[in-house]
Image (cartoon, rainbow, N blue to C red; front, side, top):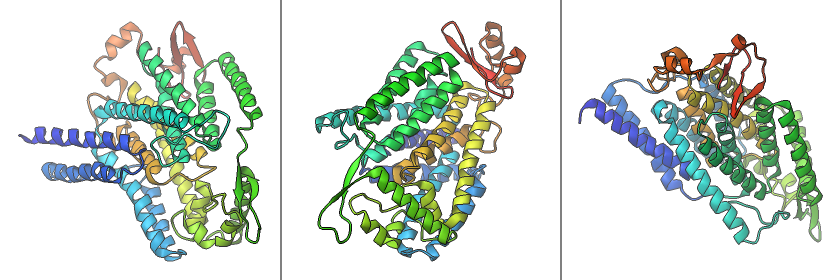
Length: 462
């Protein structure tokens, strides 16, 4: 086997492992498979560097915020309530996530994007199918939150976060896939995802999904159609609110109480928010240590007041970051999120092929709704965070005009480099500059084909 054949074999095995990782990440108790799916590509990347005698870990636009937060997170261990716990969490959560990000950037090949998307779709179909069947098999009903869909995940919260993470890729694919039959299939899978999301009865995820659908509807549909969606959504929302599905109650046992007391979970979260903000106001630069469990270790008395409501952390990713690493850590974390959003949006606008454009804009949407969902809880941990890191790493890898995006003939950097450009130009199927058509930042229908314009000289696809 010659050198080039060996490299292609290594890339194929690495791709298989990443696809397996995408499939098993949402499944609970698959740590051994995850370890192999992470370890094998890492080892093969070292082999590939030895063969090519070249350093393959690439610089990315996220290097600075990742480095700064790693420093602050590491320093939080020194002032942690439980240093050993914070060290384990820092390595196992943050360190592993950053490692997966850089591994994805270094080992993923842009031409393999369709295989990764296929693995995402297959895993999503399995998770939804089992989740819906298991929900009704356990006696779940539409208007009761006592039984919630959790699928093969560790619970309804992580399952809802998984659905929210993948929904942007399903939703935006409807505007980029040319095959009508494929669009119908993707529409059906999206509808199944929305149904499964409702069965989780995770209200924070519902809000994130509403934001996603509303935002995409505003961007890609005419005002009349968008207004119809808003009216229909409001009617559905009113119907379900009238059934009492929006309010969730839980029994708590306060210290000194002779019995259990019922409390609405929204009210409990409000008390948690006020307590957290008070602590941050009193000592904004305090670092109680990395890891969600540091909250209950530091504020045991408050947690015991709401025993039964599971208020063992701040139930908000940003507030947890602020408590664990101080305001300084929160500022750096917000800088990291901003860099991801700015990068994916900017690169999505200038991408030369619809595949790359689709994935980058879907990643931009995914990051927004992911953290909106985590405003009411904190699932920036474990498999939910790892899936985010992997998708962001792939987005950085395939992006045009960046050091991390190795050029490949299948993904031309510029439109004119596409060998089919002249053919598409003659047939009227190539992207046209919006300002040349005199079109505003809106959407238009031409027959059965959707065309849309992006601001600042974006592209219109017919």
